[in-house]
Length: 93
Image: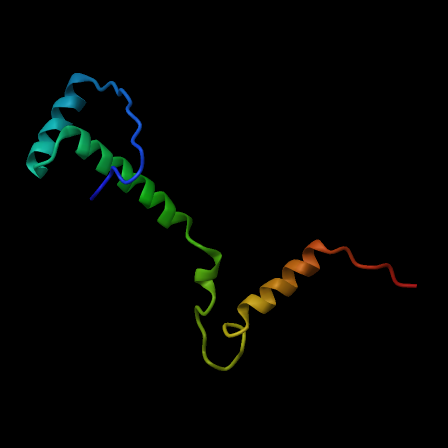
């Protein structure tokens, strides 16, 4: 893992003694510095949030029996539905 691809920001973090001891011990077991261990923990936490957010497009095609065309034309149908939801209807005479 290369963390210095972008300009780094230096910061100071305060841990209680037990947190510091446990984090330093975990870093030692992994064979990395305490700073690298903390960077990895933060990166993993942020990656988990991105994965949890996901994308609405992931649901298209779920349960596709092959009998309909919903999965094949999902973008088109979604566009039509959004257009109907956001464009006011013209009054009829």
